[in-house]
Image (cartoon, rainbow, N blue to C red; front, side):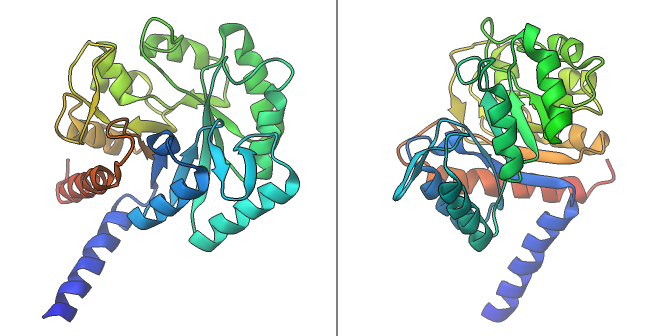
Length: 278
């Protein structure tokens, strides 16, 4: 019986992975910002998550000095790449890069670093006057830029209309919204997703306690106001091909049990989605 049960669990897990083969389940490592990147890689491996979005201020950890950004020397970069290969984990996005990280002197270095590390996306909140330069560097380095949003009023892209305007005429700039921040900002999530249809390259997948309250906190997936099943349904309708990046900013000192629950919730909802023709 135990053998049959294990086979069933394996098949169920395989179904979740292959059901939406173009969806990459990731973790935004800000979830583990109290820990190092090396510890975050281990945590992702423990959770069975094979993709990461890494923020550029995270300490690498171990005996590798510095943070995960362009200032790392070649030896440190190669050691990180070796560990990622060993764990079969891929860093798919670097960010969120905003005015607190970049300036006119170092912006290109972020793109060069992303290309060196094999990272496909830079998630960013560029200043309005820098959008063309982000687009130019995206073309040069073949690293796409995806616009993120934080709570209003400080984020340029807190409302989807500003994201649409920023993407116009810039083919290498797409969208990477945070559905939790949309809810905090009082934005209708499904309506916002429709406005960005065809240009959503990834998103921060989370749930929050209250709608239209920029100070509300994160909660376990399915316990808040974001209507995550409807978000997944809309992604399926849009024939989404991209990154679902889980982010969780609660119980930051010890959140692994919560993250296990969050991943199980996502997989359960994915199975429900695949069992329907909706």
